[in-house]
Image (cartoon, rainbow, N blue to C red; front, side, top):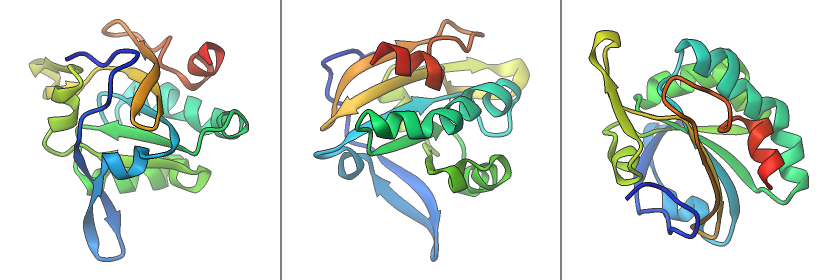
Length: 161
């Protein structure tokens, strides 16, 4: 399945660093009865992800809240240690963007968003996408073409809603 409007997001357990180390986060618990923005990107500390994609959601956090969005979640096929460090280094965590690790890539595969670029060491990473999810169902989905970061940015998603 490729993530699409009207589709219910699959069950998935992601990871987040907490007080006791890596803690499981059930995606369905994050989505149930809530309006959430979820976006995926190739990886923490990578060029465009760090300079454009993630910052676009930091900049637009308040505007999404004004439109009734309860939480913005960034997902990458990385480990939770890296995601925590990236959230701290970019200011995303302080700005209220939740960074979750899809450590085994299972959510990314279930959404049909995986891609590989062996020359860069990218194996089964996430394509760029952004979605508005209302009570677990995608109401807006924007998927960038490979190598682009245009329609999956915070500003572009805001325009779509």
